[in-house]
Length: 374
Picture 1 (cartoon, rainbow, N blue to C red):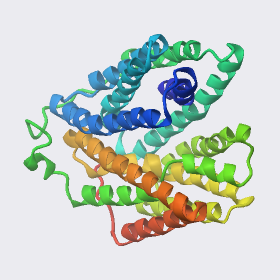
Picture 2: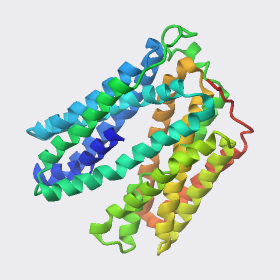
Picture 3: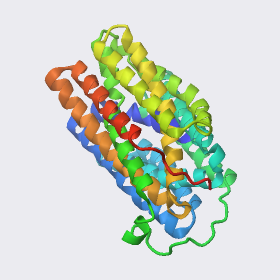
Picture 4: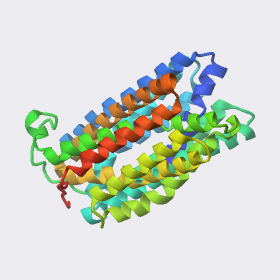
């Protein structure tokens, strides 16, 4: 939560600072963000595998949080576009370093009977940061007369607290010697990720193809008449639903059939797409359903990955799952933009509903997912 507050304080201001404050072009901003996102996706695979190889998660998780904490003062002091780009990529590299080992660590320290609740709680707190960060940034910009660099300095405070909390408050359990030594990315080790895991990766990727960037929710509401100044309400409303329901649904997933709950989440996504395609007052219902489907599925998918992978390959399993899902999200957002430009907003959300239906069919024809309690 603390790190997400810090990151979102920066993310909402940095593009405007680059263009209005430093004269960067929109294409250059896009290049910087693209490089940052690609760095995150690639690093996740190797950091997860490295945590399996070392048999330790906490040093990598802590290192990732420290990288993101250090990036905020570097942004505040950066003299030009090049150094800002380097700091931004460093921040996203920190996310890539920590994410897969962090999820594996959560799985390591929670029993399978409460794992859904654990991941639901993580998603809920992360989402709190997603709307507290922008609100805090807006307030500080008003208080400090649009002093971007002062806000970047302030953003270093919660991220530093997160690193301290990780160092002092999280104790990693003892890991016995891994069942398979050596590089986790070898063919023989990857063969231990069985058909249930790879089917989950395929379902997750198809699911993500139906769930493109939330930026299109903002664009849809603005196109339908929402004043520009009020557009942040779209993501605030979506994230409020997400944050409020992620933990209850995570806890429910520990008792319910995960396949059924994931299917219900897909139905919520399809419903959101239908309402957003139609427009009008139903857009806000679509936004609420979007947050509902996120609450029902995101923590659940993380728990399902833990259940489908051997304990000594969890870092690798999360890294690969996140890589494939990240590539699917990039493809989905690109496709959504093309459809929007050529046929308009209804085509984008109609395509999302159709792909969501495909994901539902893939899920339906899988009888069950294997789970590991420990």
